Length: 538
Image 1: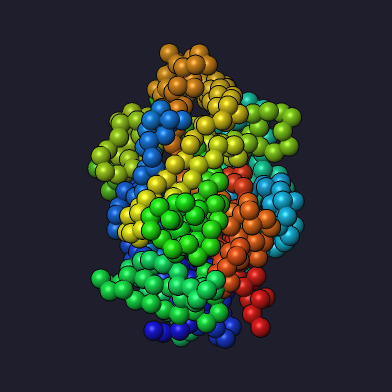
Image 2: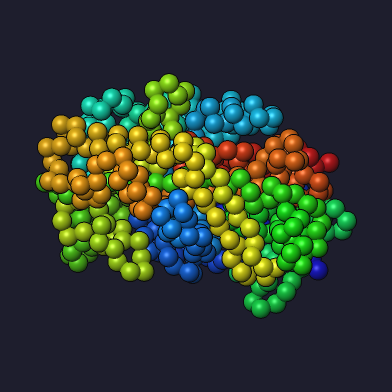
């Protein structure tokens, strides 16, 4: 059995950062366990290639949630990255930090050091923002953020104008002074290639002699001596192996895998563990509970002007954009499908936005089996205005079904399970229609295709968004942070309550969800978590 100072489970958005920062001084040895394989794949590196990775079992866990009453009984597809870089290698790359009020609420809940003013220096330090440095943006950090203002589809300008006509300000930087408004999204790419956590942080770390990365290595349980975590058991190439941690074991498997591994290791709800024959090391009812996620829907329109559909659908169009990408690393394939978006409040009395917008200059009403149909759009000029809720009050859970680490856990999202979530979504979809009715959009819309003009009553709109909504892939809080062991899994230093030598550092520790996409905050959590770990080393 080999011994390392630190064992990190998961090479995703947080785990890649941890491997880099914990090994940088050369003082500590690090073993990083990744259940998947390499990220050196064409469709991983090409930004719009995530349409191909959306169902690909070679790089994706392809989880499926339980049939959800709130989603009209649908069982949602839950993609999660299973490769170096984790979900940062298969996501849509939109770079949003979250609102000041989100993090200040974390600190106010008893988590010192997690307020916005504490975390802004971390966000700035990790970024290399193409838009340049200012009071909010950083340059010179490991992760490049691209300003797409000059590269978006021409139709985006009409969306931005319509958003302003509907009453929203134009916002040049959602990570700047304020979040509300419409604008073009910054994305995590560099020179036309995806800037995953693996590319930004892990690849440099892998060149160091004190770092070992084991791929295709599925962690099966944390090993304990009493209440101290001392190592990890894992499966690799059909063999069961163990590694010992001289200092700490750190779980960075994300909001699905971290609670799953804790439960498999005997840390979790006692009745669940006993029922599955797992010896209880430490009972904590919060492990896997408090699941929060963002749920979204698209409104799709048939337009009078060309959209990306006319470019990406025909074989010759695919050839042209493919050549453009290969030769110049530019064009539609170098971007996210979400060219622009924004944030708004369904209640003017609210202090921060509660809804996020997405503008996509193409449409995919006609699905293609086996892939997310980004690269096979509709045969007519279509575009979509999407939205998702930012801080829903619905709560779900992620719990293991068996004691077998290969069996997927049960994911119960409980979407739209509160009246408040239904009411705000109803207001939100009406606002999407308001944007579409504004002069700059209305004059180029032939018809609303989904849900269509026949869906107009409140009851029909609610039924429609229950049927057509789905996760936008931002699950958090299943190992949430807090000072009270009866209500949280980790303390403000990310140490697992009641256990020594074990931390969870990933999006599962978020006390509550944030206003926007979660990848930037997950990477920040890895950076901040590494600082806490290093501070605690004697």
